Amino acid sequence: MSRTTTPGGDFDPILMAVLANRLNAIVREMTNTLLKTARSAVLAVVRDFSCSIVTGDNRLLCAAEGAPVHIFGSSLQTAAMCELHADLGPGDAFLHNDPYLGNSHPADHMYMVPVFIDGQHLFTACAKAHQADCGNSIPSTYFANARDVYEEGALIFPCVRVQRNYEHVDDIIRMCRRRIRVPEQWYGDYLASIGSARIGERRLIELTKRYGVDMLKAFVEAWFAYSERRTVEAIRRMPAGRWTSTSVYDPLPPLLPDGLPIRVDIEVDPAAGRIEVDLTHNADNIAFGLNESVACATSNAMCGVFNCIDPDVPHNAGSFARINVKLRQGCVTGIPEFPHSCSMATTNIGDRIVNAVQAAFAQVGEGYGNAEGAMGMGAGAAVISGYDWRRDGAYINQEWMIANGGPATPATDGWLNFGLPVACGVIYRGSVEVDESKFPMLYRSMRVARGGAGAGTFRGGPGVEVVYGPRRDAMTIVVSCDGQVNAPRGVRGGQDGPPAETWKILLNGAEEKLPGVTICTLKAGEWIRGVDAGGGGYGSPLARDPQRVRRDVLERWETLESGEVDDESLAVDVAATAARRLALVTGGTG
Image 1: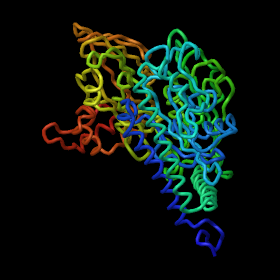
Image 2: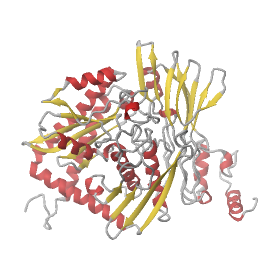
Image 3: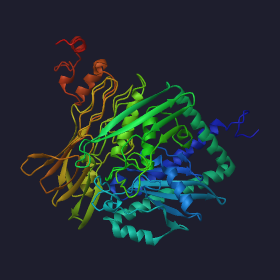
Image 4: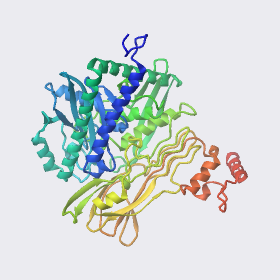
């Protein structure tokens, strides 16, 4: 009997665990390589990138802790590579950022290295990295108001070869250097991304040589089959049914004076072990930069599903086979029609999709689904740019000093450093010290927004308030904030989170309210103040453990008015709490 099989003919489960963890280790080494060698702060500090491994026949195999919005579509991009390049060979590398051909959005540069062993294309090592600048017509990788790809202006590479025989294709590099505002910074990030993918290639070759091609092929099929079985088991624990949820994107005058409803329909079929997410009942493509690409619409719908089922289910092509995402040609949440812009496909409307799916699952019953998490990118995630007199040159960077309160769940409070629904906390928060040393800026303050979460049996995560501005010369700030009007919703009796806010502080100290999507210029002495939205609550606040209220007051995340707490001892007044809750239930005045 082969040591790789059990008497029943299945792949050895111990070896399966070893190989699955070895692949995770390879992706983590790719991730650390990119993190330690990248030049821009958005990669080297914030870690707005993700690495993955895809099989030679274009099935996502491993993504470790990659951001969902980045990695669920990896196989779409490797499929494009295989379709467009019949002459793949060792030493090749490809740059792909075309949202009409499988990429997320143009600011995400995906670098793909096909891995050949004994002449066979067995894997593709992928590194997708968000750029500090991608050639947009405005100094930002996000352009919400772009009427089409031409106004957007990004350099788009529909899966082009950037290395052959391990040598650079200089034509592509010259194009990027000419059009990107920070060419040396981009080139450093390019080398880091290519280096990360090459590390993956090297380790995959070493792994295959150790275990053999046949063994690795058998493992891949067994791993996908195991992942699919785990997904079926998770779905069969759910009741059958169909549920609808709508999350409304904020007004965007003059195009969307009343906002934009984003509807999802989910259907759970436990007998068949399948879930369908239908995104087709939404508006047609709109002349703005918020249209979803196929990769983003699919990944954000799947992200919402995986947030609501067994967290131990592996995330790969095996589990994906049991989740169908239904899209429609020419839909704002579907298949974009060229030349509609997908500049912000990864974030704002994508966040609404994740939230709506989670809220739909909450309708299944107690213990299911999640509340909505804070969405959109406020002032703490603005793209800043200008002139740096210290280096006598231009600078551009995306800040990532948001917290964006996470959604409450059936068993936990929302996470403080949630970030965005589409990334689920994977992207790191930035560093005040690094930002102030790399860029000519100052932070005046940063603090958790007191009372900044939706109440519930489990509360949402609070946001933060951040205030910053330029040291000397003017600074341009591009903000693309959702959630200022339609805040994150609570579910099953939980309260909505508070909305986001953006303010400009003038030289005289007066504050000017800014719209959610805005471009503003700050002079020295002026500041921008952003307040994140807070996550929605799950379940009735009257059922919340009073000791949890006490802890929130002690942490200064809530005010004393939020609960009956003795100001002297900061102990819970159990009797007063019970009386007040009873009065609220019965309509009394206690």
